[in-house]
Image (tube, rainbow, N blue to C red; front, side):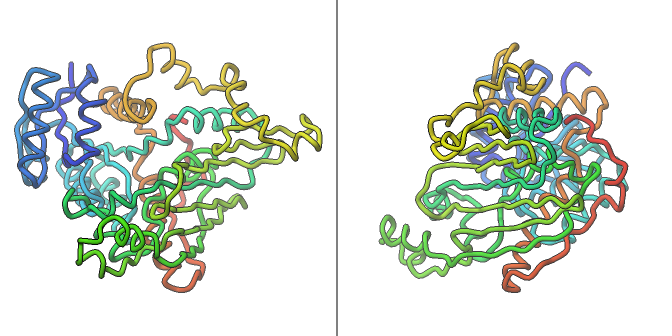
Amino acid sequence: MEKLNVGIIGLGSRGQWLMRDVILLMPTVKVTAVCDVYEDRNEQAAALTEEICGHRPAMETDYKKLIHRDDVDVVVVTCAWESHVPAAIEAMKAGKPVGMEVGGAYSIKQCWDLVDTYEATHTPFMFLENCCYGRRELMALNMVKQGLFGDIVHCRGGYMHDLREEVAKGEENRHYRLRNYTHRNAENYPTHELGPIAKILGINHGNRMLSLTAMSSRSAGLHEYVKDCMSDNDKLLHTRFAQGDVVNTLIKCAGGETILLTLNTTLPRFYSRDFTVCGTKGMYEEENDTVFLDKKYTMEEELFWNKFWGNAKEYEEEYDHPIWKKFLADGVQGGHGGMDWLVFEAFFDSIMNGKPCPIDVYDAASWMSITALSEESISLGGQAVAIPDFTNGAWTTSVDPAF
């Protein structure tokens, strides 16, 4: 097969962005069909494909019709959160390899349905968590594997991103976050921070997450934003948003490690994923991009650490992950600093060459389950809830295929 014939489901901002910056530029891919419930988005995607690649793909408004087209070999799901799992399941049942964009699950049953379908069909599936391919995330993973930080006991991460405008303008922009923030209170977007941490801690590969407890602050940020910036929108002014401004989720792992996840998307703040790795010999912290190693610094240097901010750059030559060393040599491409390119490159390479997908259905189910479980824990006042073992015990012997 010279090229993979790809169908893309979901052509909002994320889908169009991925097409423009990544998918249409990949030499092993031909986009043969696009799908969105909105005709104008279909037309925009078709025109973009023609502009970049010289051909117009077929257009569908029903994702099932796209999946069952004879000219579609591989399906990419980039639609609203609610449709991710149903579309991926339909693709697997049709025998079409599927790459599914990220988001949280709406129920634990939904996660089991995803796993059960994969195990019944063995259709290749990859969870497209681009942050697993971030340069610093992979460098930290490489440092961990080389023992630089000793035994890892705790990791921290967050999705801290001021999304007030995006959420509040959900109706006019036809964006799914507004309806989620109106009706749900959960760690609604856990996988950007959890994915890289899971790879570092060997989750589903010799380790697993056992339980979590989640707490949420009250919801005030969105209402304040609407009052200040959209006061003419009477409907939103009187909307009571369910989503708390700050959600903290603490996870306990079988190996004894803990993970702290923080969601903060409805308050004014700078962007951060707060990626932090803590071990017995040192640590990495993303917010000031520093590596700290035991016995290397004086007490005064530890107290006035800001002069060492950014020192992680000094470790790149020795500890950049091989994936990034090759990427830098070949020339960085794609959005989000190259992460989008790398995750799609890994997906398409797995399909073309019959290799295991490096972020598989068990990763997807366990990482996405945090949303539904945190929602339950919050509703119970922070009560601990168990995290299912979606591998059915296989985590004890499974080896990570790529990381």
